[in-house]
Image 1 (spheres, one colour):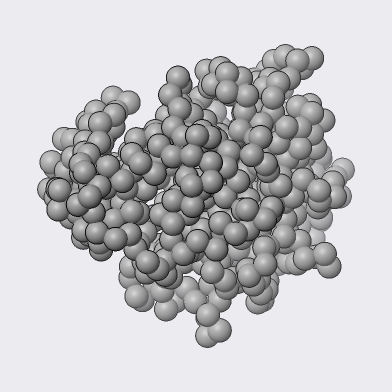
Image 2 (tube, helix red, strand yellow):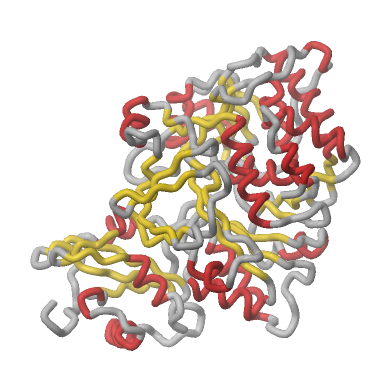
Amino acid sequence: MNDTAHALSSSRTLWELVARRADLTPDRPVLLQDDRTLTFGELRARAERVAAGLHSMGVRPGTVVAWQLPTRIETALLSFALARLGAVQTPIIPFYRDREVGFALRESKAEFFAIPGEWRGFDHTEMARRLGAKGVFEAYDALPEGDPAVLPAPPAEGTSVRWIYWTSGTTSDPKGVLHTDRSLIAGGSCLAHALRLSADDVGSMAFPYAHIAGPDYTVMLLLYGFPAVMFEQFALPDALEGYRKHGVTVAGGSTAFYSMFLTEQRKQPDSPVIPSLRLLAGGGAPKPPEIYHSVVREMGVQLTHGYGMTEVPMITMGSPDDTTENLATTEGRPPEGMEIRIVDGEVRLRGEAVCQGYLDAAQTAEAFDGDGFLRTGDLGQLTGSGHLVLTGRLKDVIIRKGENISAKEIEDLLAAHPAIGDVAVIGLPDAERGERVCAVVEQPPGAEKLTLDAMTSYLRAEGLSTHKLPEQLEVVDALPRNETLRKVLKYKLRERYRDSIAVHRPSGRW
């Protein structure tokens, strides 16, 4: 991290960070979208006017404001206006519907709710009416504005809870995750430090701004003074025009995004799909080593992958100057100030980027151990160089006849199979063995139909132990994914196949 970025990372609040960057480079762009450009100076000035408009509506320091908006310049302006006021904001992913949105509004006790009106064929205004939401206002392309002279002083400290994010949930209600300005700044600083970016770079936001990655990424822009292209709707190949037009140098999002870029590159293998691109970076889901090698080999760019979650937006991150082995097989190293402790194989965390807990005090008590470390539920180990290797999740350990099997180990091997586009390995109830191993795969277009025998023969050849071989293969058109970073929803697969019957038993004593 350069000296300027390091100095800015000490900002007490997000608004202080905005103001300091605006003083340094007021005329440099920060957000690009279609033919629109917002500079750092305009970000500060316009956010103050929007803050004044919100103030006239009754928003004060500590007022809870929910917003469910797409990735747009206006969304960023609204969010920073709320940060200027010291309001408590609770972003909601725009794809969520009545159940999740109603839960978030009730649990957060939101007094205002900003929506896009009708967006992508869905009427958010009507949903807000059904849910009895308070203080509903549209904030898609027009925001309330006023005279900044009416504003109170900006918040002076960044350790109060001013953000409520929502975990995506599985079969139960999502959890409200409590963050401060300082925890978000710490998370963004980790990302900025690892990626070794400069003011000459151009980033991209292809994920929902309401995701925890929104402030994570924006903090990086403020620290280094470079812009990012915002994509309201991300789909390839349509989005490629925006990447090329603005000369994006850094792209990514998660493993699913890497795969999508690779698919486009393979359509024109002799020509870079994004000529200006030099780095893919992301996190949010496991990365098989083969994906790393394919990106470097076929796209001619570097790939750095990291590890984060709603509770801790950035934990570790690969760096462009890491070794090939570390970039392919680890999640990178933690920054200074992030403590990682491995307890019975579980990754536990303590540091400024860690959330303050959850809205539900009982959930908070359960999530932290006696030393104040957050229990992540992820399994991993630290290498001698301090890099973190994730080996799966506690709930992803398949216990077959008393032996622990890592789903990720099998997934990483299958990811290199030419007839497999993507794969999820799950454990299913089995009367004889406790659990059996089931592989659920997507096949790429034109691939020869995969059989269970062919798959297990491949895994044997790769050296996988007999007792880890899948006993069941399911081929699907598309794996179920969430709408943020496209993470596979394994619980839906477990629900779908839990009553199915295994069709194969590996030979041998298992």
